[in-house]
Image 1 (cartoon, rainbow, N blue to C red):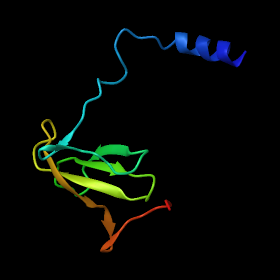
Image 2 (image 1 turned 90 degrees about the vertical axis):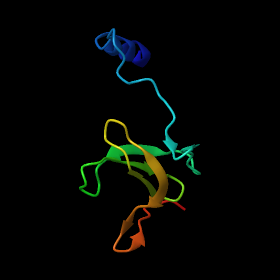
Image 3 (image 1 turned 60 degrees about the vertical axis):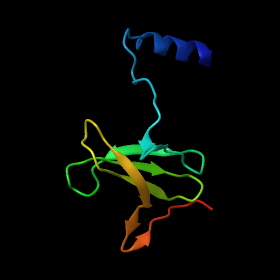
Image 4 (image 1 turned 180 degrees about the vertical axis):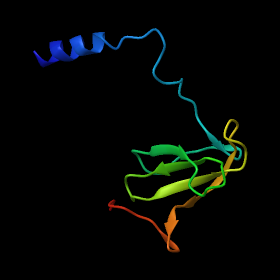
Length: 97
């Protein structure tokens, strides 16, 4: 019964265009970005107020967030090495092990 209800709900949202763009890998310098822990949670936002969006990648295992600064533009971002998100001079960590 539940499967039928969910299928019926899905019929109302069918679209000829995809909801998301085709996934692609992002580089930091010459290397592809590869997070050490599983369950990465990426976000693209200007966190330092310079008008350029940074790539933030949250990590489940340690509860830390990698910050890849944007050295390009918002339409053609360029990322290099990452730093950990800090607050008050300390690396931020939420939950994790």
